[in-house]
Figure (cartoon, helix red, strand yellow):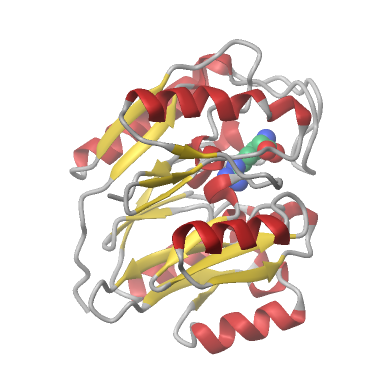
Length: 274
Ligand code: ARG
């Protein structure tokens, strides 16, 4: 099957102040040394790869003292040009919401600020006619209700149960969506979800690519797809083979320094959907 790419618009934040100073997920060890120069090179490689594949990259200025601001995905969900902002669970990350809001407002968008804890695309994943919404560690079910009310799209709550997969985007990503049918092709790691949520995913996405724990722990599901190219962690070797077998073109990009903070390719990339 031949897969077709669609050009995307991504919002990112340069890792100039990236570090691990606090631990808010099991991947983080407070004050573990981060090679900032290497992180910068890995990040630049990702940006160059996006541009080389025809995508637009826009940047929010990084702010000293906000080491996780590089994880742009967490700051909003944008669908149909409407911006649903963030409300971080961890106090250390709360100031990031205002920084991104400032960027969106300057770019001409209104920003809805959720009342309940909600971490943008970290836990909110548009998939065809649904928004998949993770909960259990960060984003709350109350925020899912705000999301559904704001976008008017059926918002499907999914219970995350493994602290290593604390955000939905560490356990699931969308490979392709059909605008005509509203169907989505996704990949996920079933054991990251409660048994009921696993059953929901099985019913909604019977053709999904199922990943192993090994590939999920390698941040293989924290990937970005343009419908054809899948920007994926090179360490996720099993998943890479599965993607090729499904007709996608894996494009490995190594963000190993960011894994120390519990983040990968998708975490560093927010999609602005017009
Ligand atoms: N250190 C960050 C945190 O724990 C990592 C965020 C990763 N982002 C993501 N979209 N999963 O909040």
